[in-house]
Image 1 (spheres, rainbow, N blue to C red):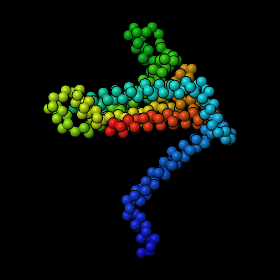
Image 2 (image 1 turned 135 degrees about the vertical axis):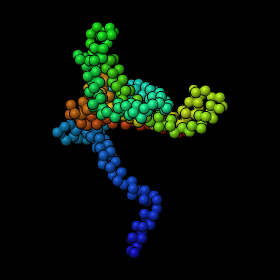
Image 3 (image 1 turned 120 degrees about the vertical axis):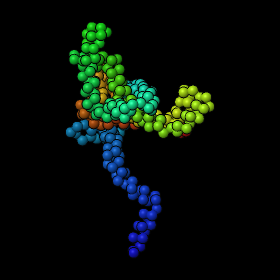
Image 4 (image 1 turned 90 degrees about the vertical axis):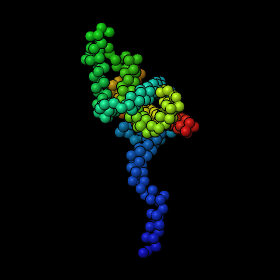
Length: 298
């Protein structure tokens, strides 16, 4: 056997070396589909590239111009409100759903499958369904409210600023509850039953058993699920674009929809890339905050 073959065999015998080899296919996919687009986005944000026109390097001027853009200020505020309103509701309602499903009930598996439908159905399809529900002329919701005597004429849900924001928040919450519910349910089922029995023997009521036994076991799952939900909510393009396209009066624009409007509709690719990259430090802040909290309370 040659010396090169012996060295290769020794290389494979080391667990760390074998781990690197096994990770290479996944790392290659990440490099092609994540790292390269991210690096390209950073480069484009530093240029004045437009569709059909090669751009020139302009440094940080796209970022500076955005700081003076009133619509961008509104977009940043909308995105923060959108995430900070919807994620807590999804977490609380998802926790309640998980606690209900954790009980022994008949037909539990079909019920769980049915509850997952809002999460499983493609966002574009479910958003079109809600768009029809909120339609200003043929809305079944308005028709039902008229029949109940609550209103006298159809409501333009997506044409009013307050109602439009409420509508997109509601649809986002509706879609996200199953993800929280099923994730937390998995954590609930991993809690040792003996701990509940011991707490009951010690005289703890149901509330104290939940706070002192159950919640510490599922807190990490809630934190991680909330972090993922914040990231996905910041990038929730399809839902908002189908329902409102950022209107009325830019009141429902988030980073993704405004970047699309600037980058594709206005053909300013460099500026659009800069808008999306403003999400990175905000998401990094939330990620570090939640991870530090988890580490401190572990």
